[in-house]
Amino acid sequence: MRVVVQRSLEATVTVNEEVQGSIDHGYVLLVGITHEDTEEDVRYVANKIANLRLFEDNLDKLNLSIQDVKGQILSISQFTLYGDSRKGRRPNFMAAAKPAQAEKLYEHFNYLLREDHNLPVETGKFGEMMEVSFTNHGPVTLIVESK
Image (cartoon, rainbow, N blue to C red; front, top):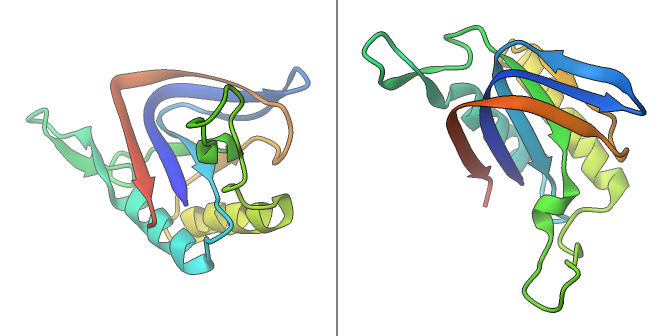
């Protein structure tokens, strides 16, 4: 599992010109699932993201988690994170999980963030063409992987 974590001041995802999800402050997560991922991978990444210290304290040190600042999450499924562009000009997406497996693990990931970590989570629509707009704060961007 591979997730790009981007600290955000605000974010919105639309599908067919209709807003599907919106947050005020927190993280925009681009979530990629590979065919080897399991619920254990999902649990590891959800726990890691919920507890990462990517927000400044009163000394301007990155010492606060998204839970500490009462932030929100906009979670976007992103199979292209497993694109391989080493050969040719068109990426190969063979490492990405098949849609049925990926959707199940993606939904479980969002469930864990909501239920185990009490985080507000907004999403787009799995498998749909989406438009994501946000303001990256910092900028702070990090990649979290389970393997």
